[in-house]
Length: 301
Image (cartoon, rainbow, N blue to C red; front, side):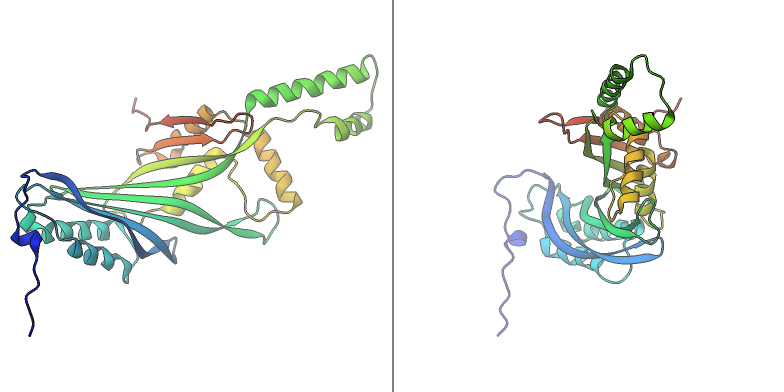
């Protein structure tokens, strides 16, 4: 005997007749396939999915329907903007009896890619970048945002100037009135150039961009490359001494306050048209607190 299973979300009416903005699930494990520059990888994503519930008399949504539609993103073809829109439309359609007109989906995962050393040929290492995709469909209007977090090193310009002054003063005090050869100057610098050093720290930039539905992919690799090029000092993976020296040189050539970092990304040519929203954080080595800055997309003149 096959008994009909009860479904109280359909047979009972809500005791409080109020609409709800969003109802759904959070933190669903999901494998998704990415295709970046022709290289495919499967990543472990955590998904949030919701629909609106405008009809106040409906007791609850159909979460199993959302789950099954979401699960389809883990099958077969790589993730793409058009595929996200199609799934969101299916979610709205599956809740027609709830009066739903909007659906949204968020995916969080780490994008893993191989990064070469600065100098040493053939040396490389894996590096991951936290990513959040936020897609929504509301009354037929699709919106897709991508946020990526990029790590970099920042060296304080003020600290660098103070360190240079101390080295300069020590040099003048040691050799006042003397005529020196280049070899003598080089010998002194070898021992005393680090009499004072500027403070540096690991830092991170969160960049949120708007993507178009017609895009064939998400452009993660090109986005990361553009951000790292703008900053000039991305953190490294595998290094030898020559690479560490090259990294030290990059830090010296790219002194930056948190304000400088935000403006560098904000004005990056490759981000034009993507409406970048920037948040940067310098995890201070001098202070017990962090320095932070936010920047919106530059306004057209």
